Image (cartoon, rainbow, N blue to C red; front, top):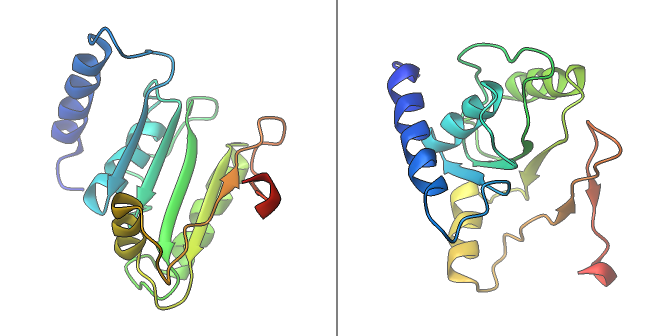
Length: 155
């Protein structure tokens, strides 16, 4: 990310505007991002932004600066296409290790083969069936660094 300071300033300004809205519960703000935006929301979580959760679709896993232990407040969901070479296997392993070291609640889910994160995002927006199912999971609060898949009977 060439100029994270600008992205951070814009993100925080948007978040401040959102918090001023009467219909917003300030304790339940989350952020999602696709591609560049996915990298931004992950980096904002690493910076300790007051977010309940972040979801990154096809986003960069690279850290602008490593998160300090205890600073990340958000649960983290990262979705990437299993065949999508934007995110390299070594980046995935490094991301997992950093999250586990910090005892973060996270899920790094590859989307089924031959599906890209964009296809899944389009499916979510259009709310129709697809050959690229969205993984469904529960973020356990008692076991950081682990995510449970939700059995179909609980959906």
